[in-house]
Image (cartoon, rainbow, N blue to C red; front, side, top):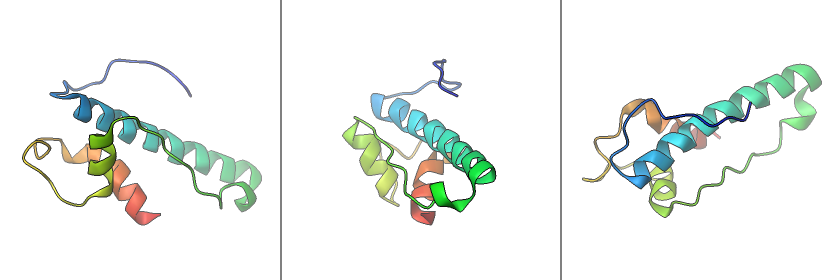
Length: 88
């Protein structure tokens, strides 16, 4: 499930590119957690998963519920990681 590929949209900043990658990684993580749960039960999925990102702006955007002047153009579908984090 690990791969390298071009992003499907053009990012206007490094923060946006990292944020899109974080969203894709979150989707992949949720998929793998569901697969592990189906195979082995709840015993391995009750632990939280740490998502690592080296861009401070992307981290801040994933934690906040506000849009700023520089980030309001980001497509709503890329806020998936923020939504998943809020849901637990």
